[in-house]
Every structure is written in C-alpha cells, then in structure tokens.
Length: 257
Image 1 (tube, rainbow, N blue to C red):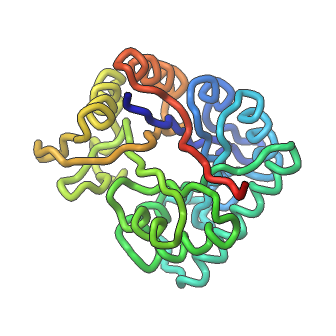
Image 2 (cartoon, one colour):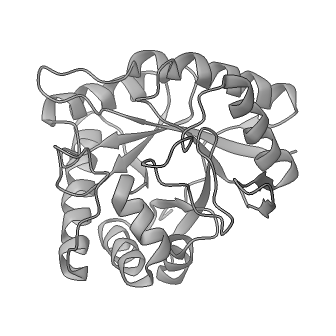
C-alpha cells in the first residue's frame, strides 16, 4: 500500500492580520508546518496554532524562513552559511519551546519559501539547514523538495528525510518548481490538483510545463494554507488519496529509546 503524509503551511497570521483558515485545514492534514515569526507568525499565533494542531493529533513542524515579513519570505536573500544556520536554529528552537510548553514535541522541519527553493538548488545552504536541524534534534524529520540538494544534505547529516511534492504547483523540466512570479505557477483548478497529486503518489511522476514526465519520490505532499479554499482542497485531496488506496499518515519519527 502506498503511504503519504499530507502537510500544510499554517500559523502565518501576524498581529491583527489573519491569513488562512488554519482550524479548518487542520481537520484534514497529517502534518502542520508552523511559521516561526520570521516570514510570518508571531508568538501568540505560534502558541495557538500548536494548540490547534495538538488538539487534532496533527504532527508539529517548524517552518523557518528568511527574516522578511514584507515579502512573506518569498524573496531571495544573500545570507552567509553561518547566518542561515543560526536563523534555522533560532526558529526551530522557538517553535519547539511552544510544543514542549503544551506537552507535545516537534516532529519535523520544513524551510519556507525562498529559503526552501534556494536550498533545493544550493548544496551549501542545504548543508547549513541540515546541520542546524541536526544540532537542535537529530530525530527531527527534514522536509525537502523531492530529488533536491536539501534531501541529499539531510541524509548526509544523518537525518530522516521526507521527499516533498506539491499538489498545487507546476513543475519545470528539471524537477524544480516554476517560480511564483511566472503566470500559471500555482494550479487553481481543484480537479487538476487532485489529478497531479495522484499521479505523483501512485505513479511516481509529474507532467512538467513542457509536457514531459519527471520521476518523483513522494513521501509528503503539500497544500498551501494561504491558497483560497485550502481546507476544501485538503479534504478533496485526502478523500481522493484514500479512495485510491493510499494511506495518509505523517512520516515515521525515530526516537532515542
């Protein structure tokens, strides 16, 4: 039987500003990537989102990004390897503290936005992120774009990794995500989203923008929480996966015992 994790980026509200329908989305996903205050989120939002995820039995993940609230962490920043390592440790540590304060524990780390995409292509940034995660907790699972440098770096660091695919994003011929600034980069049609997801999970391939197939290894699949109708899309996708005989569950976690 195929098995896959269904994850969503949540906790991205900030102060008086609300983004996404987190409570509704958390009803249908198995892992939550929670913003840690750099690209989005704030301490109160982090606490509330952790509580909501714990209540629904959803695995907790830190979602560290570049310190760029204005750009929502989706703009490239040229930071040193040491700076990237430090900002990941800082954010993972912060969310881990909120988890522990509520009697829970962190399960995974998924970098956000531009940090994620840059680390998918750059081995030095990928290594910095993997080393940062390992230094905080060697039993955390590192999420990275399937087949990317981040997946390789995670394995080399001794971490468990989950290769991630995207139900609502288009793929370039090299297996990377089409940049959001390009027209059609985000898939809006729910039927197309479900079809692409099933193709990646069941058949292990995705059709790229030039019409060619690319092989992917999918351990976890992402729905973006800031997408309109994200909760309904998550439910539709989960039901379609289960109808196809796919088990939907978070990635297994190693422990010290």
